Length: 126
Image (cartoon, rainbow, N blue to C red; front, side):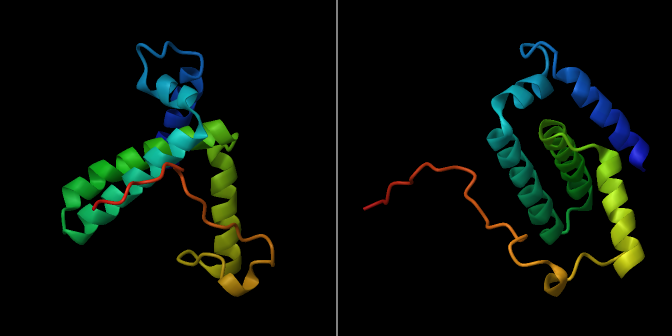
């Protein structure tokens, strides 16, 4: 399973020096982390919408888009897939495969506040 992610990661690394006129990935990397985060959030919402609608094939397609955008953000943040797999292994050893870290075990101050991805104000309709 991780082989595809590894190959994708290497392709995104290579796209950092690519031609933005020819590579969507290069354009996305140059657009900055804010744009990358927004694209990741959009894809996550699309997965949720399709899952709620019972559209399995659409969930598969949108999940692939979600993973792509996650890997692009990893590259921009200096995160390697092996780092994520190691964290997943650590959590599995501590809590089991289906668990995430329980909220009561997260140290005070290490939880991050939710921040807006876009700061544009929307005008109220009258």
